[in-house]
Length: 387
Image (cartoon, rainbow, N blue to C red; front, side, top):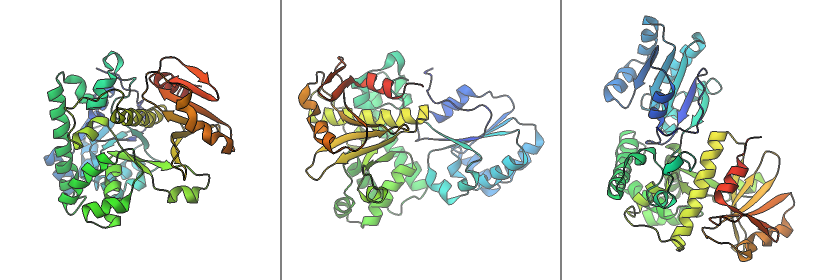
């Protein structure tokens, strides 16, 4: 059993969110005793129907026995039960409620907002490099991603089949059954476009033209991916918050393997040193930042920056102390002064304390000019070190 970094409270009630297949159920079964615990699984259609038709059934069950804990898996499939959970939390402080979800979209339509402040919120992601332990293999992760179940598959073909099945299951279970879109065909085409656009500044108008849908439909499609934890935005950097929200964001899918499955590339190994390899390495580092931030509850903010001349900083990290770290992500095995030239272009115009850094696969950590060069593992360790 691979130990997860996410630390969950044993006493306070909480939501555990994350995409399907990130190991939410496995983690809960590992951490929480079955004694005096009732487990309600809404992946079971029978259970889903029972509680959808009669949400107050939960109250009746809790009266019959002195339960210590209630775990409701995939709660978005029967959101009406949230009203009952809210009532029970108010009336019985001794019961811990644990609610998992892979879609915030239906919860927004329900009463999840009533539970804000009463339930902690945690997120679970695919494995980080720290969670793979001795099984960590960068090339394998680049090709197949980091979904936990893949640790149990040995052959490349089996891993590829699982990822292809995941994409089809998502279309069926999360989109069609949950009725998140009216027409599946344009959304299915959009999924491939989102994979092609991964790590790029989103051009809603261009995508809309390609799909022959309107601009707002494309925005809604991206919102669906974000609400189902299959992707996230990286916002453009600007000192002015108003200008910042008006800038088009970059979009990243939540897992490298899922992106490659959408592009039908799971059985094609990456070539080190290629342009695609560099893109995947950047995607990998961005994912590590997002995942470790969630697990260490670090109050960092992440942005990208592109100026009018096309010069770009891959990620800007704002720390709680006010420092800004400008990072160029390079897949190179050996870096040199030329890799930091874009960072140094921005330095004269920066009006706050900042650090210029290259994160790469170069094992030698050193400073060249004004730019600090780190191996990516060293950089992440320094960033997320405990005070």
